[in-house]
Length: 287
Image (cartoon, rainbow, N blue to C red; front, side):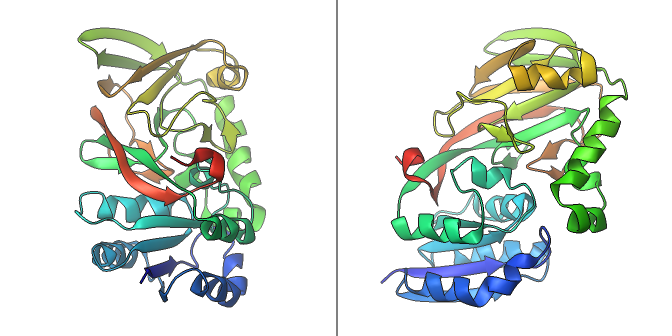
């Protein structure tokens, strides 16, 4: 018998997914022998329920934004029996879903779960906190959590892009010291970006990336127009380093953003946790 737990939140995005929640539960109940569901009462509740699901459920389905996904994955990353993850987008931009071919409305996500294709993917550990697809510091890195929630609910992704425009004209330079593969180098850059996937901010900026190759990409843009943002869109003027372990020190006086969540400031000791989580994904991503 296949047992599944469905965790969902009303806090992410515009909250519209709740309008179709009964239909989602009905569809999911056809996929598994047993389906339990729970409306989350905040981050701590989600982490607690997810942790309790390990060893008890075969599948853990999460509906929420990137932040909800980030906290739940961190709650279970060190457990011995981690359920296969299902994801239903409940956020605004949903980069985490795009990186697995899970984009669009909840009906498309349900279709992917029904098809049953899965892939194992890497997590990236930074000082004991794991991110799924990105970590950043410097220009633009605080957009996801610094944009007021009432604006996000009212204007959706446009609220994020408006904040990005205001930062594009605010000159930012940070010094980064990187140690990788026994070598060290220093550089000046508008922002430091670590990626374990192709998509960030709703755009594909790392097209050749794999989420199950045991590597994370460090991208360092040269200073330029709009704080070097155009370098990422046109894939020029960016130093790219692929590694399984590295260390980063910066003089940025701000916290690192991981999967859109504010975390901690300071030096990062980075290591890839290869194939740590299994998730339902689009067929082209399956392994």
